[in-house]
Amino acid sequence: MKVEYPGFGSIVIDGTRFDRDMIVERGEPRPRRKGPSKTRRGEYGHTPLTAAEDLPWSSPKLVIGTGYSGALPIASDVREEARAREVELVTLPTSEACELLRALDDDDVAAVLHVTC
Image 1 (cartoon, one colour):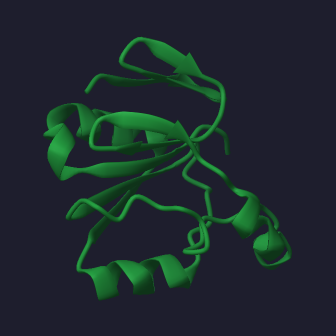
Image 2 (image 1 turned 60 degrees about the horizontal axis):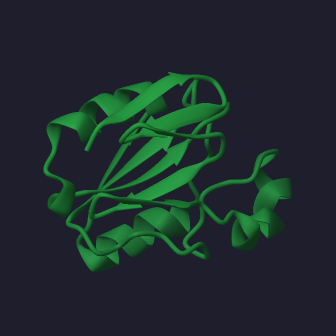
């Protein structure tokens, strides 16, 4: 899978540009639906990533791109859910997460890619 992060606010997955956060599961991109996490925005000052979202738990590794400056808050329930499911979490600024994704086999990884902050 070819994932590029040209900069703040967009991401390119296999040649298609997206101007929003994306989830990749088994090589297939889909938009991140932040709605379920918005109720916890007040706790973090920004919409966090929470286990209430439809996260891609089907792979043994979940790469989370935490944004341009790595500021995406990750709620503790995501870490707890990952432990319970025996999924390895890898959190990196989005540019570094994209580098890692390019090196991994599509079938063995899932990702949440935040394109701002």
